[in-house]
Structure formats: C-alpha cells, structure tokens
Image (cartoon, rainbow over the protein chains, first blue to last red):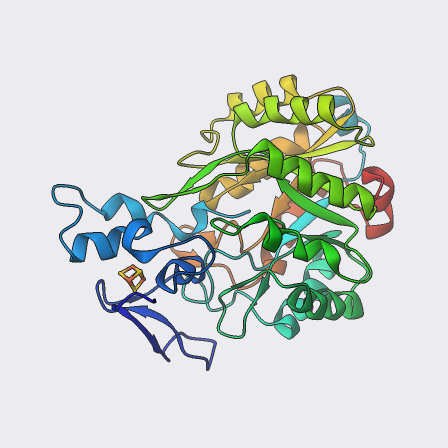
Amino acid sequence: MTCPYLEYREGIEGTPTERAYCAAVDEFVQPMRADVCNDRYDLSHTSDCEFYREAEGLEAGESADDATGPSSEEAD
Amino acid sequence: MSGYDDYLAGEPVVVTVALTGGVHGKEANPNLPETPAEVAAAAADAAEAGASVAHLHARKPNGERAFSTERFQELTDAVRETTDLVVQHSTGGTGAPLSERRKPLRTDPAPEMASLDMGPLNRYRHLTSENPRAMVDALYDEMAERGIKPELEAFNDGHVNEVHGLLERRDLAEPYHTTLVFGGGTLTPARPRNLLHLVDNLPEGATFNTLGFGPHQLPFATLGTVLGGHVRVGLEDNVYYERGELAASNAQLVERVADVARTLGREPATPVEAREILNC
Ligand code: SF4
C-alpha cells in the first residue's frame, strides 16, 4: 500500500515526468524517499516516514524538522 | 600507500565524478543528470574537465532509484559510448535487500569498479542503511568473482576498522581504494584534523579518496590532494558551486578540483593512468 499523502505531479524544472509529491508537507520528495512513500523493498511509510507519522499524530512531541537535512548530506 | 610523498612527487590525482546519485534529484538542482543520455553527456563533459572515474547510480524515468541490471546496463552502455572513463557502479541502497544490491554488479561487461559501503549510516529520522558485515562480504565476494575492484566507502572512522576487518576476512588486491567521507550525521565530522587521523589509520597498501559533502567538497578535495590522496566530487555529493549558487554541471565541479590539483603540482590522471594507479 502506498502512502495516502503521495501524489505524482509535474513541476520539477528540467524534467517533463511526474514526480513524487507529498501532500502532508506540500513538497516534492527526494527520489530515495519516494521508495518509502511507495512501500518498496523493506520500507514502510507508516514506520519509516516522519512526515506521515507527524501528520497522523504518531510522533507527538517530536519535531520532524531535523529529518529533512540538506539534500547533499547523503549519498552512497 | 598514498601519502605526502606522492604530493611532493607530483603523482597524478584520480578524480572520481559522482554524477547523479540516488538520494536527491532534479528537485535539488535541475542541472543534475538523471536519464542515461543526460548522465552520459555529463560524463563526457566531466572527462573533458579532468575526471577519470565515473561513479554511477541508475534511476527510473521519474528519477527514482533503480537497482535492476537492465537499468544499469542501459546507463553503463551510454557512458561507455561517450567516454573511456573507469566505470564504477554503486551498490549502495538504503532499505534495499542484498538481492537488489547485487544487480548493478551483473552488467555485461561488469563494471571495472563498484562501491562497497563499509557499515551503517543513518538517514532521515527513522532509516538506517545497515550494511552489516555479512552483506559487505557477500557483495565483495561477487565483485571478486566478476573481477570488479571495490571502492571501500568509510562513512566514519569506525568504518576504517571495518576496512581492516574486511582485509582480515578476504584477500583483496592492492591498492585498497578507500573513500573517506566527511559531513554531518553519521559521517566523520568535517574537520581537517580528522582527515589526518583517518589517513594515519588506513592499512598499508591503501589509496584514498576524500569526499566532502556540500560545502566541504572543495576544502577536503584540496586537503586530500596535498596529502597525496585522490578526490571525489560531483552533484551526488554537492549541488552547489558556491554558497547560494547551484552548480551548473558536474564538469564545473571537476574543473575546479582539477585546477586546484594543477596549482598544487599534480595533474589530473587520465583514465589510462587511473586504471594503473587503482589496479582495475
Ligand atoms: S513523504 Fe511521507 S507523508 Fe509524504 S507521501 Fe511520502 S511517505 Fe507519505
């Protein structure tokens, strides 16, 4: 099951394809996070996404702010 | 082993260009290449600017991560058509099982190199790229079987211990090409003295890349060049050219470190020289 907040939209400069968009935070999501949104591999939006958990009141008292991070801090 | 003597001797610097990555995409910088055609064109420009190794991740048409051999085949074929760069496939993949992470190794021909993450890395709030030893060994064994040179990615100083551990468990060919990664989170804090300590702790027979994320890319490339190491730059690791100014291309980032290397008396290695230096 994919996340109920997931949509695919056009609007990223430089590409005509529809991209993963999060209606919970009103932003396009990073491609890696889109695997969480789609529950691919061993990933699950209910347990692995702080935005989902915050929107659903599952992370009360915790801020998801530190979870976004600069986009260039992660690679492999 | 790489060292200051290599700097004094003016040995060539191997510049690896991490062209696309799999974490962020065009939402972070519209100049980041995603499709095989875009990556191949960016690789050709980067080669012209002084790169000798291309670090590759495959993507789906919408930019999302792809691990399949078919996607990597399409990508690697495109890059090989436009350049003679050493081809290095990523085997990284947060949340992806070993069965997926093996697939980039199975192109025909096999990549000359592949990345091997040496241990865990936290991502976002709830995720960890686990990279347990059993997975590291299994990926290494398949690389060895297919004649692929591993690039040992040490996200922090504990992972240098893991490099030593892998050398005890497996019989790797020299040089042990290690990438020392600097930045926030689980990575080694980006302080120059930490690079000195890490280089001191590498095994005999190692060469090293410096990889600084974001604003640390240029200073750590410069430091690594002075210490006789090699460098990795590119839009996978840093989407900015300067504070507040997005990079125009991978080639722009490569050109800058190639200029630094020349200023410091080291030429960027050609792909032929890189194959010799890295034994791949
Ligand atoms: S980012 Fe999180 S909340 Fe948003 S669509 Fe993806 S899984 Fe759902």
